Image (cartoon, rainbow, N blue to C red; front, side, top):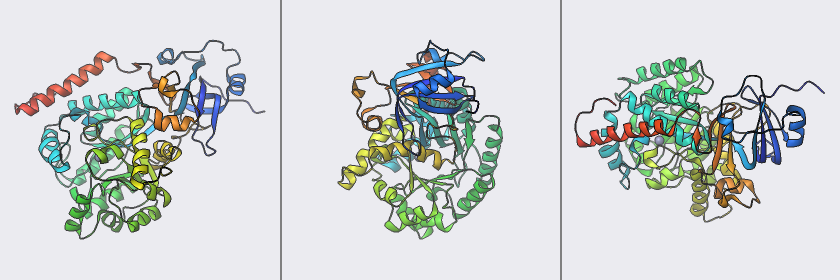
Length: 467
Ligand SMILES: [Zn+2]
């Protein structure tokens, strides 16, 4: 037998859902981790014999928040937990936690034009940072270990993600008109390159290229951003076919529907992440499937804004890689992917009149392995040897989660996200049993206060001081 690698962290898992290629679910499992990577996954007896033969004491989730002593391997006891790969939120606008609950129950264009855009005109770097901190905390709290973001002043979201330790794929939203960050789309592409350079020193943050939508850009912007995404080898993301109204607007602007606009511009490829895709024809589903592009489904945002129902069952049947997103906190109003998973399954069933449509396993795939594939981030989405240790644990002492017959069913239908007891990114425990590793409740509250004071001032029409 070859020499086993050293493990610095060993997890004992009551029930482990690996999401590996064999869909292994292991009871009383062990995960050995070294330097943030998973080096072995097996039954506990095998892992404990190989990696922790002399360790008797095990840490509770909360004890595992403490920084690790150099050289001393530790065991984290999750034997009363359901352990899953960290969830991947493939579409959000993190800083929009600032506007959560500010203007609900409005038509999309009224909501955007009368409430959100006037606020966003006065955005400051401090506000984007504070909003992103709150968002990162909410996501870690509810089992998300990686999120893909599109917004303004994205370097502030990068600063927040770095501070909180969460994994992120960030993009400066690219529009055909000046924003708080740039005057021209070309400058936005340059900003994207600068952001990529600024995060090159960390392996938890990557950068993507996100033109906002076909109705807010142009054919040239689509082509230029796609070429730049290819040059920099990063994903290209766009809001696409979110509603029938968007498709009508696209017909007016371009003489064709959104899928044809991006397809004819050469922007449909495996690096493309198409967000929403609510209003699709059969031919468009075929075209997306043939291109290898991913679709980020945001069921709760689509329901709340009455945008329509994405044809998830048909997309899956066509072989499209469907992943999940929450959208921003102002249009959901939650960044909790467990709620999104439930909504994805329920909506897929009720819209097709078929209770077997969009089953739990397909939904968990969307929130894990499919997300990793969409973001082209190797090593994420499943708990297997060689992957990155992005892991979450649900407490099986929660009344809503016991007894357990099918852990995947529990993760999708019964869990609510607040049953998450531990969230680990790259082998580091960032949240456990009510406590965050990198922020105190007081600091979190201060960030929330900063947001509400800014919004109150902006709503009263008075000039605000900056943060
Ligand atoms: Zn969005």
